[in-house]
Image (cartoon, rainbow, N blue to C red):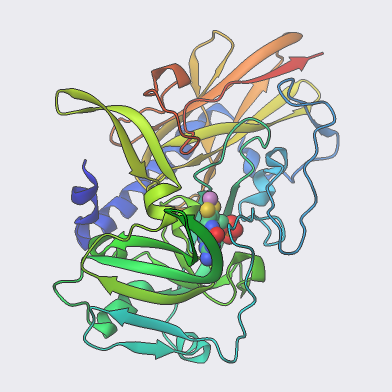
Length: 400
Ligand SMILES: Nc1nc2c(c(=O)[nH]1)N[C@H]1C(S)=C(S)[C@@H](COP(=O)(O)O)O[C@H]1N2
Ligand SMILES: [Mo]
């Protein structure tokens, strides 16, 4: 499906897709439930349960503590049945120009450009509008297995105003093609040997911006949006990599051409070899929808019963299955957390009884309802940029 076809998908298709994922996830649960006791009712580490170290991780692995104003990543071994929602204090934090402190009483969100009614909202205006809430998980487009073990990831319940309501009130003119979202954070960029001030910004084509799930989020897990996550307002584009979710949002601008700023045109741009018609070409694309991805992050042990846990992220397409392979064994179906919804992360688990002592390699793969299978690293196209790491990720551990 091309991006264009995806973005012009009608409301009714969106709704039926959402109904479909409910069914698919429930079906996955029913199938898994026959094979194993549901693990989701267990606390993070039950009494007598212990984490089994991965041998692909340094023995003294630890991540730096969260610092106000800094970046932060999850220790993904701590993702368990208890952590469907990532704590606000532990949700990963990434920004490129530092964290601006916006004054809430003078805060304004402007809507400008090719609109019938340019407008400025105060925070109180936004808070007084109808709100909706949605579970959404996402990862940084630069998330990776090595070093940080997939830590640039999180899942939360978000609450805020529907972006489409604001765009409709503003009245996007027919010449408006692209919607640009500016943050209040400003950095200096050297472009063509000239130093210029730039705000962090990302853009969406009008059709993508009009999706009914896009939110101007004011709350995260029931609290006012924390400073590190964009206080007081951030854009949330469910199903997209984190870079789309502009924090400290101050301006929405409608224009008749592509926005080419650093984070659309130069950075967060993946370079890979692809077939274009019957030609093989090196293609650059900006990081947008989350590729179909699963990864194992945790193995726990209770006597001789082991549990393998991992996560799935994608663009919201319903899933068919998540499977785990141990050494050269068959792919075995894992159980998907029934709390999963279309844009949340989907945690999965699989019991592993009485493994043999010695080193083992375990790997997961996810298949979506359209039959797309998460590829092995060796099946991925040649790629030279560090964005969009979604191939299968084998992990190793030693059972003693
Ligand atoms: N204003 C602003 N928004 C931003 C960024 C930024 O640098 N400035 N970084 C983006 C990137 S690259 C990511 S991965 C996500 C991280 O969101 P989080 O810190 O809430 O997890 O924010 C996005 N939104
Ligand atoms: Mo990112």
